[in-house]
Image 1 (cartoon, rainbow, N blue to C red):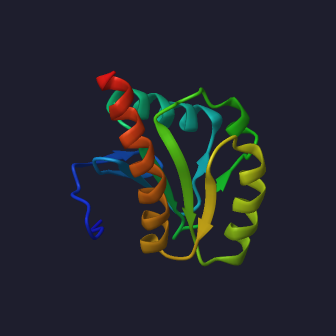
Image 2 (image 1 turned 120 degrees about the horizontal axis):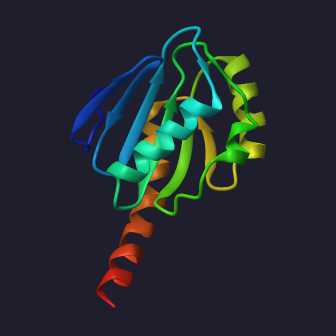
Image 3 (image 1 turned 135 degrees about the vertical axis):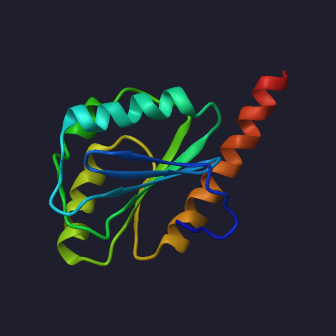
Length: 139
């Protein structure tokens, strides 16, 4: 997946879709009809924790229809490096689901209709956090 200003590092393919890995960004694309269980979401967060050592953002690119239990957001382990989640969709039903999910996530979570606007929003959040992260490491 080509994103302006970002270099794709790797693509992680799993049973229910793909994760596109960039330096400070992960884009998740879930397969049509998949169900994201709490185990799947927790494994994502374990993967993030193991592979990202600087602040990053996550984009849920919802070009396919799939289901996720919004309650799982309450079960997520704390990850101080994940600075925001952006959901990208143009589907009305998916948008409604994303608004429900937002209520369960304790952090920056916004809905967008294009990848570009989602990346711009996350870049703003992550760049501020990255500069603060580097200042703390150098002190």
